[in-house]
Length: 426
Image 1 (cartoon, rainbow, N blue to C red):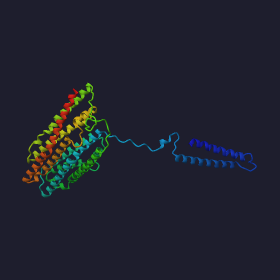
Image 2: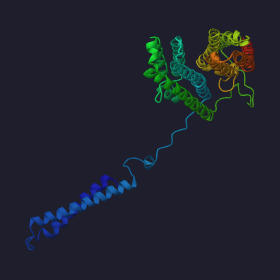
Image 3: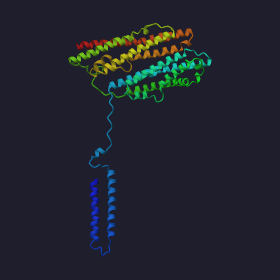
Image 4: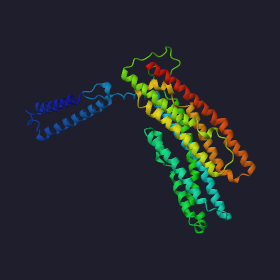
């Protein structure tokens, strides 16, 4: 029963009540000594009954969940949202973002935290023993510059992958702002540059206290984010990939990939992209593999020469990062029409690949070299030469050089695939 039908029924009840009252009492009202007020009471009683009927109808209508003019099916529960779609490239790109951020926030930030704690301890004990050196201010300034450079690398990486939720969380710095390490280190350096007056009160200096606290927090922050990124990587690897057309990379495909028919302009464009990829591999890739420091015999050296080694390692890692960006984030991403052909050459860049292994081996070696530089002055001559040989030579031979050779072999294979594809396109 609709609301309109209820109103019509109520009006009929009221009319019937008035008519019955008039029929019963109208012609004989004088006989029964009825007054007009009696008829008013009858009308009021009828109205009250009508209101009660109207209320009962409304309650009944609400319980039945019937909406006038709308089919009953539309008043049911909302349909479930369709499952989110994950394409292989989405997962590859997110894994690349996780790996690159993990490399910065994990070993590199942790190494800087340990180095900062060492500087803090050295200043604290130097003040107590009266052995604080005047060069400590320069050490702090250099340390602050390196921490700031690393944090800016993180910010640049976050800007590049800003669409991901974990990147937005990383940029918030809610629990800890790592730039506090930079500002406090520079303020302590400024205090030490004032000479004996600045050194005398350094232990009570608010910036020195903040420097000690923030270097500890930097290590905790680094460890927390490293664990979070490791867990996130497992989650991303477990995401369901939306099936697509068979790729030339699928070695388990039942049928071999068929050759495509290209228009002349498409052949020219694909040949150009392959040539650019080969040029980058042979320039940035081979320059990184053939870096002199990888095959140089290192012995114990001065801190200045160790700084030169650190600079060379960082330069090589930048070459590999540039190669990675140029090929996967530019050439492949910006030319989706030829994605399968390009990935048939260079492969998917996530997980255990020659490029990632080479980059990881260099990152681990760089951390050890920085640690050796920090502790070098505290070692006796014999221990110093033994440690230098273990770190500077054995690790290169056992870890960095094999990774570089595998990366070199991968570049050679890529060039062979490029030559084969370009021959077909002619």
